[in-house]
Amino acid sequence: MKKILSLLLALITALSLFSFGSSAEAEKAAEKNALRFNEDGSFKIMQIADIQDIFIFRPLTRMFIEDLLENENPDLVVLTGDNISPGAGFMKWMTKKSIDNFMKIFEEKKVPVAIVYGNHDEENKLTKEEQWEVYESYDCFVGVRDSEELSGYGTYYLPILSSKSDKQKFTLWFFDSQDYNKDEEVGGYGCVEKDQIEWYIKTEQELAKTNKRLIPSLAFQHIIVPEIYEVLYKITETDESGAITYYDVKGKYLEDQTIVESGITYGYPEKYADEDTALLETPCPPKYSNGQADAFIEYGNVLGIAVGHDHKNCFVIPYKGLDIIQTPTASFGSYGDHNRGARIITLDENDLNEYGTYMVYFRDYYDIEADEKLYNRYVFNSDGAGYTTKERIVAAFKYFF
Image 1 (cartoon, rainbow, N blue to C red):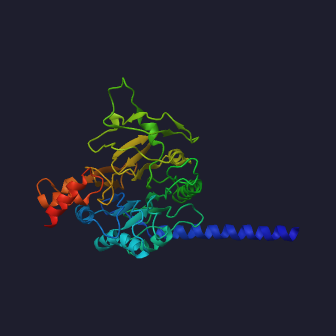
Image 2 (cartoon, helix red, strand yellow):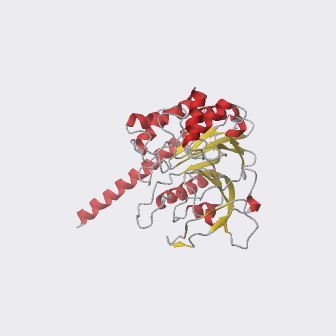
Image 3 (tube, rainbow, N blue to C red):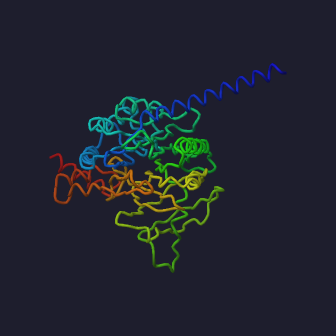
């Protein structure tokens, strides 16, 4: 009996050492890939959401990304999932080519790139780990492989160091928000899992201990958190105020995973709206929460969580001190609307208790009404923009001939 207990103890010790080593390796990688504030204390992040294209890259997406980099000159690009289309190719080389299409642009511009995965990235010939190897083949890629025991793939953090020293001044968190709920009775999209949240809490505590304080931070992932439905509000038949736009929600889900109030209409609080705010489709969070937003709020140093997934929506809305930052698609390979664009997030080393943000839209750079050739390319090149098949065929004919 004692021999069995000794063997069990040795096995547990070995496993714990393996886990610690894996975490240590991830931390070393994070430090190696550390970013740094510029001499003037500035740092600019460009969030690009839902490129979602295949191995044949949409020319408008390529042009827009190239011009975004040229005009905005970001210090970091963050791709927040659905980076490639589901079934980007029926062969592995096609899936790789789908990633190469945009990574070659970032490599050429020498801009650091970090990624998270979306639900559609999973639906390809290359696994998430195999896709990660493609990203890692580029010198510009600064993502960090997470510990093997974590759910999903690609949950990590990156420090931003002071412009004057190697002191960490800011943290960027990256989460794999999974793909789809494995519980078929519940269904819906995936959710950041409990072990990922526990990793965040443990890492947050370690960073606070090392730096003798909680470090301000931002988080990035693909799927929006379900708490979005706690900040939107119901519109009744007698309510004529408040909402700048609204939609019909098919069903609101509570933490106990029960569906309630089917068919309720929700609105966006007017006091939080600005010129960029657009609520043009139903937000699609998971039907449950594992407490990610609560963990952020408890520590109070995560300023916001930036997401994609809902291609037409664009807003920044506070929830108990945590901003929910929704960014529309920047691509023409995925469905979208008039607000296709990229989000810019600015940081100032001298005041890290807040951040700045603004949108850069395709329409800011190009006047499709004034350029007939560009207009025709726009019509046949942009998915989900409301054009009929006939309009697309006519536009393609005019463009090419």
